[in-house]
Image (cartoon, rainbow, N blue to C red):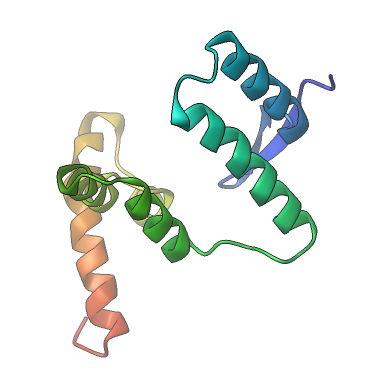
Length: 129
């Protein structure tokens, strides 16, 4: 096992488990739990599929494609709604870059996120910004 690799995250890189080692870890964990949950099997499958297709240059998932994939994975309408709400409300890196707030005001990033999304949608459709 090589154990660690570097993963690009925002403008920095962090130490992470390499995909090859992650595959071994997922397989060991799945075996320990007798592969009793579908998410254990799907995790291994997705890791292999994404890694092989990206290495071959065949597949580079867009963010919209990932969202639709995550929505399809949720069968219950309530879970789909929760996912969409979390996606709309959870601050992303762009929100932090747009406005640097002190830690004491960091809770304001949550209402900022939907406002930023609406402005982006309005700008994208040619409406007034």
